[in-house]
Image (tube, rainbow, N blue to C red; front, side, top):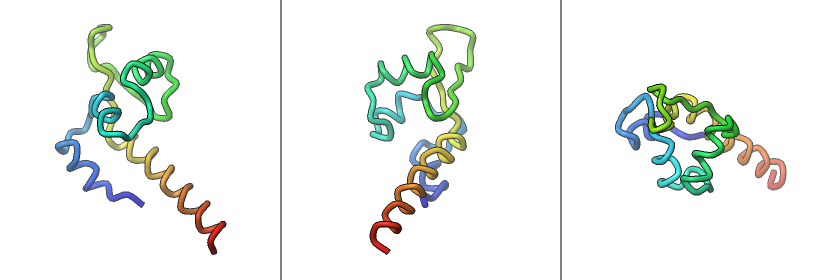
Length: 86
């Protein structure tokens, strides 16, 4: 499992993190453009929000929502590995 405090620290203890930051740090295997397109269509595996009602406003991700998603992915991978390797 991932440590929430380490993840939170990595993003400067912010409650909301720009979607671009997640992409640039390698958490999503997407380009920034593809991530933004998926965000616009609600096709990302976690919710995004635009703090302002403007197309120019950046997509933001609540660090808690991102943590739940990424931690679930890590748990699934660990469970799969355990099933294969006992």
